[in-house]
Length: 349
Image 1 (cartoon, rainbow, N blue to C red):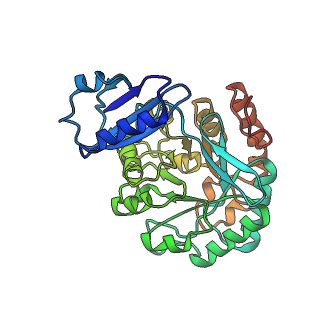
Image 2 (image 1 turned 180 degrees about the vertical axis):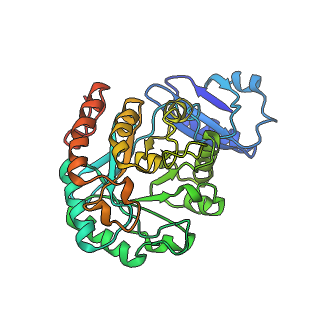
Image 3 (image 1 turned 135 degrees about the horizontal axis):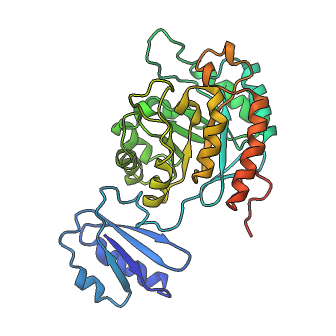
């Protein structure tokens, strides 16, 4: 249930009204828009009468929410959510609400030279975040599984050298204790419905990059986000990374139609992974441009200095020079829609 408060209501009066509702065993989620306060009621609201709410002098409108996801619902939070992260270089990066965030780096951290060189090149080209896998979920137990804690140390060193915030995947709850220096925790497609893990991340205050499962519906993705938000963490970035269909030419079928659907029904920022979405490096630039044109709030791209020698997913990684050219094009695409991609101008007019 959504309660729209009349404009001009004092914070104290809204707080008293919220406390009155909470006495009935209902959680109240408060969201302040540009001109209005919205209260989202989470719990069993069947016993609450809409007519009695409408009779209150603070209430302008009451809406019953039909969708199973509540906190992730745009009705609960009309304005777009923006994720802000400050790097060690003093720059603040944004994703969402008019800002396009670019996350780039290798699929896996392999060597010190590799991760630092990629970090320096993607930052120079304009990327705002550095990605790098250290714990890798692989279909085969004999495939490269990542460098583990040693790889995390190298990723943190690249962060210290460049100042870029880092993004890497969490595989299990016990790994949280070593993720203090990680700026954005990635939940991979295979763990999207690991509800025990999602609940634990609800008590974490770090931003969570939640990837869509390769057989998950859009509603299931939003419900996975709801698990995290129900625990109190609303700093979530949704990621479309392709779904499994009967088509076998590409690694997955990149569902770009998910972008406008997610942005219509949710306030959370949406980014796209064209590397996993296609599995083919030559398709990545085209799909990256299409994603930004469709309204995506960012991209996560695999960049490797020598894709043919990569220990993981080299066939879908682009080289640093190709990334630099792509960034120039993406800047133009973002500018056409009045959105910011470069980090020079964080304050919008």
